[in-house]
Length: 298
Image (cartoon, rainbow, N blue to C red; front, side):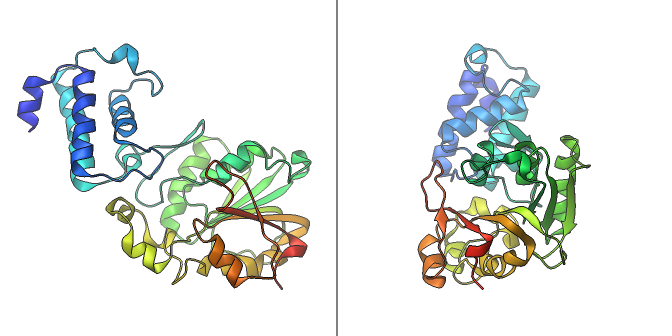
């Protein structure tokens, strides 16, 4: 296929058409930040060719060198055959205007909490400059910890993960944003290594995939760390631990914000007396909840 393509392809437009066809033929799943074969093909091609990711049109009819053709075709074929998420192929993921280094040691960033941090958690946080301490549980690549630091400029932030390998990736991202003086990375199973610490704000995008959903996940997700996805039979194992421990780690006016995927109904059945506030995101109000300290289950 490579040799035939190199003979017949010459422009970026040729490669784009081929990539979209190849991805559709392979029946790929798009759930890691990009939503279609076209969007993913554009991203991969522009990234590999070191072109601006927001400028396709000026380059569509540009002719490629033989070396460039080979590089792009190689990545297209890896995506189609190995079903590796694009972010792992490029070692890069985006949340809004922020980009992060990623590899298979962490899940690909895709949290709805990022949208809420862009708005500095308004209206729930009335005085953003009054947030002096924050915690990001299950930080992974540290993407949300970095966004926390930008949203709340006076906050010192702890970011925890059970995986030492994930924290190695987190360290790269904290360093690339020059936030070592504000973000403290801690290896911890949720609150286990944080005795006595209290925070004005705790956020978490913990594992929340149920056993049944894990069994049905598309192949792309199996490239991600299993312990960053799976959370017991009903997907709430980590969330239950967070709810049990959060009160002792929040200041009196502290807030807890947790993302739980498609588990709203299951969570509300498990905690029928807990007054969850469901936050509006681009996907609706079923994925992220907020609780004040005094609302947490005892």
